[in-house]
Length: 270
Image (cartoon, rainbow, N blue to C red; front, side):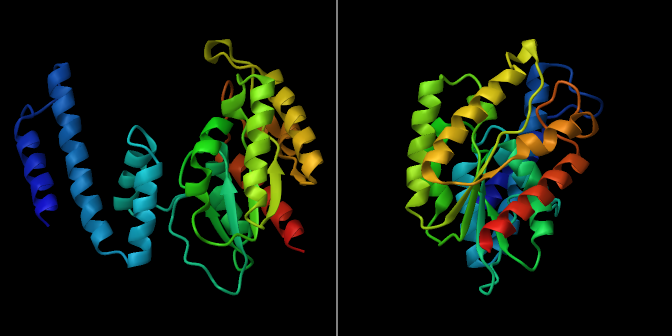
């Protein structure tokens, strides 16, 4: 309670320091306005979390530890207090259904909710509490993402953030990730990385993903892990689902990917 009162007081002080009307006129005013807004969000978020069940509070702590303060955690907090659903919603398991874990970057985040919709009543669909980024991040954080629960299927991908990773490093790290995932006893599904456009300004090339998918395919073949070929599924639909110069997809594109992922998971559960 003292923590909440302190945050509320800070928010009031910062708001009082703002100019009476209009847009901020300098960097100091803009920073003060942002700080006031962030403090107000924090007050509301902490108050909301205090009302959650112990299980939901524990999940929020996991998110706080893994999402990072730069972008995803503030985004999560704002969405939470606005009552918005997201890929990082707490999932209350139906004990009669299998538990699924999705691991991947922002593209995976985009198809998490459509996958839940596709598997409603058929599986409990969780996602890792992060934008999982490159294989280097996977090696560092995999134990935290897996948590203490038992998984029936783990559907995973690393690729877009590894587009500049040397081939030997990518293969070595991916191999180590696979070995760790195999120890969970879950059935594994590798998701091939979705296509990206050439974009010199971002130092990205379409061929880099083709190369990484080929390297990953060899690792999965070695371990007998089936591939959910999202690259192949999305390639003929790029004009329909991918905005120009973007590695991400439209809402309809994520619905398409979610349905594809759901089918792959159901096939693995048989």
